[in-house]
Length: 118
Image (cartoon, rainbow, N blue to C red; front, side, top):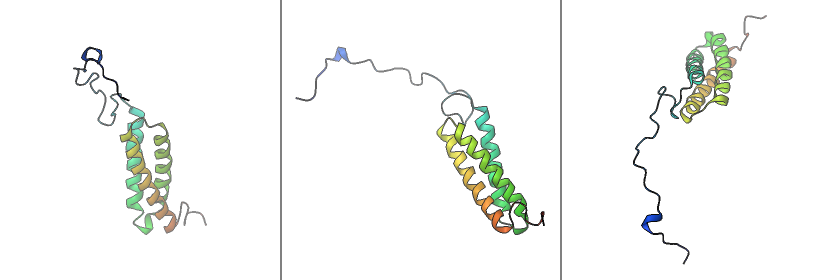
């Protein structure tokens, strides 16, 4: 027989503690520890991503969308590199995606220096 039978006295006692370490820190830190640098980078990358995405929809805002997208991509990539929790990684991927779309739309409409350098 492949299974072994243990007596009731040899089993470990079930843990009666519901949550041994209560969560501290902010909403974004799902491991219970504060991560202020990652949270600031999440907000910055998210704001730049939204700015680049929205500005990319307008042809005449190509400078804003391309630069905001480029900076958002760089900030999001660094934040993804140093992220600690799954929630942070999810937020960074979303901001990298919106920054990338805004950057590419800005590049298609005129680029980083379109019309400034002749």
